Length: 165
Image (tube, rainbow, N blue to C red; front, side):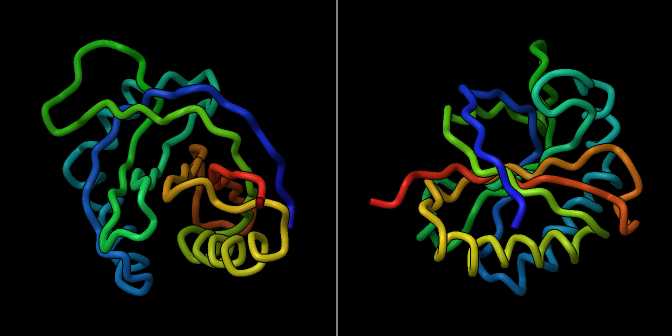
């Protein structure tokens, strides 16, 4: 599995967030629906207008699991971009992502299926056999602008890590 390790300081993101049950089958269905809602209600247009196109993640949309407690019954998922400063619409919020060391995994193929498969492989194969463990329930999904339904689409999954003790 192709990955790299990155150290990154605190980040600020502007997001629309929603709570989801920690049930894989349900969340795998509801998360794409949430993305669809954000297109329908014009959240995506507002985010694209503010997107700082340069910087750490470049011209991308971010999917974020913001729950620091992986044992909770639900998690907070958010869709957003890097925060560029300035006023924030009522339906959006600014969230701070703490500094971490991250394992960064690349995923190639149509979204959401290929991404969901890769995420499963990371947790079922990579972490059990590596020198790392997830550092929290947080993750960042980096989705570059492009056709997400082609075999050539490439996105990333950033997971905070700690060395196994």
